[in-house]
Length: 409
Image (cartoon, rainbow, N blue to C red; front, top):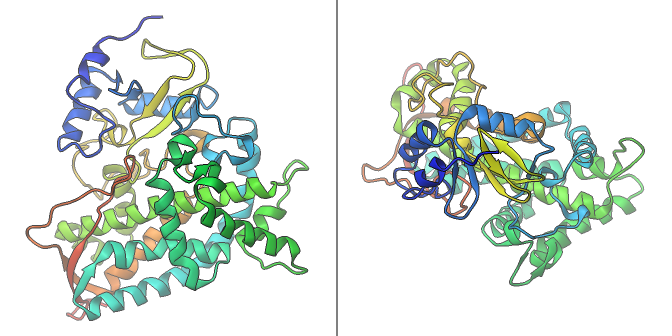
């Protein structure tokens, strides 16, 4: 096998894993053209082109999902579904998919729509405000809390615990300063989830919610243990909360800074779906996905060894010139709006994609129906959230007016 050396040289002055770099997309474009498989400063390999990312995503036997540092071993019961190897991954995923079936997800739409209306009423009453804190954050927190059967007054705790996990060292090291494992590193979070599971185990007639369905669903004669159920519940909340929050924030940013997009979507509601997909393409909430090689392999002539870390360049693949016309432009008329990598790809595509799209659609539809105009301050500067793999604004201090002019509803 041959090893590409151009890739190593190409990243000497550019780190594709540094999502705060001001010229990140220019650097990614250079990698796609000059070094589609390159070595990052931290030693990980980076895949820049769409075809390579998609092919690797389909090869789940070779590339196992993991943000963990080399040498970190996670017990089976505490592996998040995205890092569980086959064939166990397929078994756990079938249980999750059964518990969160499409017809059950649809039940949350009226709740999400009522919540969005109430949040926008509050924002309009003050002439606007921070759309991240007052709109993007509460929506997924409340929706997922409802699905899980958590009391409304506790929903804010889920957001706080989610931030605590993703902004700490547990995702990479399986520990933090408080201890090892999920229960040791985040005891409040796990104690709350464990109690939810215990209550349903002990109930004569448990509530018809996601937690109950998750622990009672049987696939191939096997159910999840309580520890497995807790692990997947924590993962689903964190992933759904984090990514959906940024998706809604990024769409709001587009609407506030591109009046032509705001006007087009307001005039034609069918374009909202295109808005969601184009935002996922151009401003994906997850900028890259980390994988670990399970055995020696090769990508585009570049040799990779067992335990090498591989980064799937989501943001880069989504702007690949060979797949997208005018890839740097925001377009609502793309012929294949879902032909991006915003939710991953292959057999391990994001299990929460359907729910995220539903929440995003309701959030935008409600906003367009109630808001007449929306803008950011002239001196607004986009400041990215601190999570290294995520992309979304820290704040969006908009001013807005209600939809009261002729033709607006």
